[in-house]
Length: 438
Image (cartoon, rainbow, N blue to C red; front, side, top):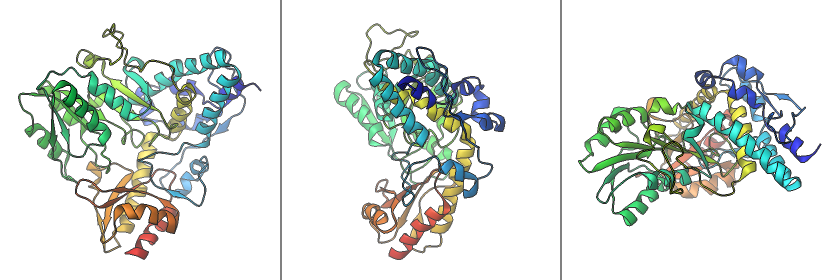
């Protein structure tokens, strides 16, 4: 079997993804999910042949650990490690790892045709698959290395004049703030931070705080869909409020994508940036930028002087990491085989279990808000007397548990981001270590 055949064998059956309607894809019916295969070829041209190896992925039927055992078995993680830092970097399943390897082998053994085959997969399968997943058109999606790159592109592309104001929140990631700082230093715009409490109790609390900060100089609002601490912002309501006032709405979706279904058309934002290597478990160094077609008159490319609304040229030019991007097809089919609604429910189940266990530890204060204003997977909490930064290596040394800290928003908090492959036993191990120091 040559390298291109191996590459084909390790991509998923893309026809299943592209033939599903947008609403059907988001809901991921049991029939489609049961029929989803991985280890199959793409059917693309330029030398990629249909693969023969097929392994069926059985979708889980509940939220309990037993129902997810087959899914958990698809990952390469050392079984002694409890990985609970998905908000920083997700771990791809073995099929994605093999797809990346096969892609590099393809362009190493047969550079010309290997590259062409990868490009075909990206153009004909990956971009339409992403567009279907998020309810948009392929022409509104551009692949990037990560959310940070996409955030820079959407920020520097927004049409602003000296003195124009952009509202951001006090809970933004540095990657969401620095592009505006660049615009402030270079173009003389004004950045205004709007204080949002952590946690907040209702979505209208966030909308009200943002709306009350608008002035006659405000031209745009920019905020996270899900904050680093796991707070869930009301994107649809914020976008509607912004558009009623003639403002652009730009969103950082790095922590949201992959935790729950997202329909970008329904949300109504003008721009959305995401990483695909966090909760969606794609290869490290993959992300996307979404620019709503109707927003192309106010958000423009940073690259092409001859761009037009019909050819907006948002894609970063030059040679891309083709094996990583082509392997996103495997990612899409893997996630679609499970179903984002199932992932949402499973992540919520695990975080609720964690919160229940933490509530039994007297020195612990849970900072995550109620379900309607918190994401399914990330939980932040403080342990009295325990420095959060010191807790990160301590948890690894004592329990082989990987977590993160959240020393911001006035907190000295620990952040635990559980994904569908985590288990109650791993959470118990985390809590046991905390109990030993508390």
